[in-house]
Image (cartoon, rainbow, N blue to C red; front, side, top):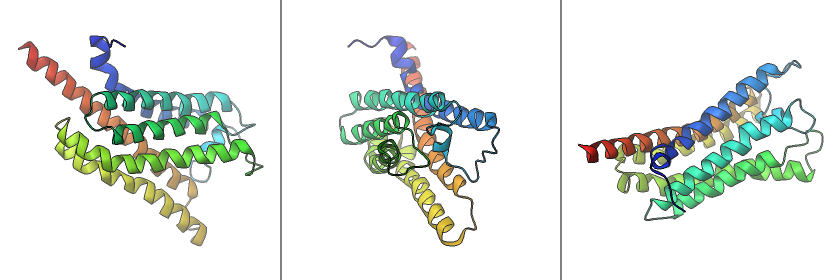
Length: 213
């Protein structure tokens, strides 16, 4: 499949686009709820749960389309990499993110197949992403000449561990609000893709500029 010059220049922006779409959807759909939805106490998935207002739209805009964008981003990274493990793990993570949108949770039945698939999708996206960071960091340093970002990349896994620790602390003490822990995890996830995409896009533009001089 041939890739146009314009696509080569802008394709990395799929990373930040996914983050903007997720964050915008989370803010807008939460604000539109009139039933007292709170970021502090409610799960993100409740906005797309079965029976929630505009659940289909939220799942599409917050999970499915961002997942497709991140799949494209990860496949693009794979095609330009000499080592494929990291990018393929990122592909797996983004596909699990899509799954979490295709299978909305049923809040009144945690054993329902859609709820189980939603949980698998959410956990799988985070797990594969954490593992991918340890493979992708060295790749960014060596193949894409981003040594500083490559060294920082594995540390982003701490966002997910912070989410887990936050939920454990909530269950044990109740002194923290559970919703913020989940948002810490999502923030780290989409922030990494966004910054990585912007850095690779800027590098691509610099390469084009240097060749035209």
